[in-house]
Image (cartoon, rainbow, N blue to C red; front, side):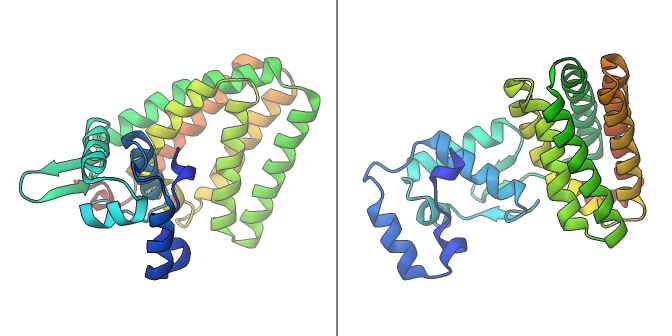
Length: 242
């Protein structure tokens, strides 16, 4: 997995240390799947940004992977729509179009809606209380103007709704759906009243969950994700590479 690969360049900033760690890795290096997971994590963390060319030699040094495995990882990510490979130029982080973003959000709305309904039906009182506490922390972030912390709590809140009820497959799918637009999710919290509107949506979802109303929780989550899409489409379309 991505966590099994140390980004030596970022973590230490010391090329000598990076080479030492790379030498300590098994000679075979990580498999293509782990390299792909690592590249995907860098895209999610906004370290690799849309339009950026991924230098093969750099990826080999950072992951300890072989040239063959790195190229295989690039092909996997291209098949997922995260990279674009151009002949004689190499691999680039792909920019999502506005239409693609809309499709990703519609899929998210359906999947996360299912999880919110499941949470209302299945979650323990302790889990519901934890969800409420996270929601309150997000509201505090709005008052203090802390978008970075809000973004982290927002990710934790949504992940909890999926994982507590055992919807791990859905969580993995949603994570992959979010990857191409992850930088936009965080950027949106810096714009206008998005944090305020998001907390209102969270409160509606939470209220339905605390009442044990699964259909209402599912619908509230669907509206929340759809509202996020509406907000993004109101931004400069240049953000979407269109």
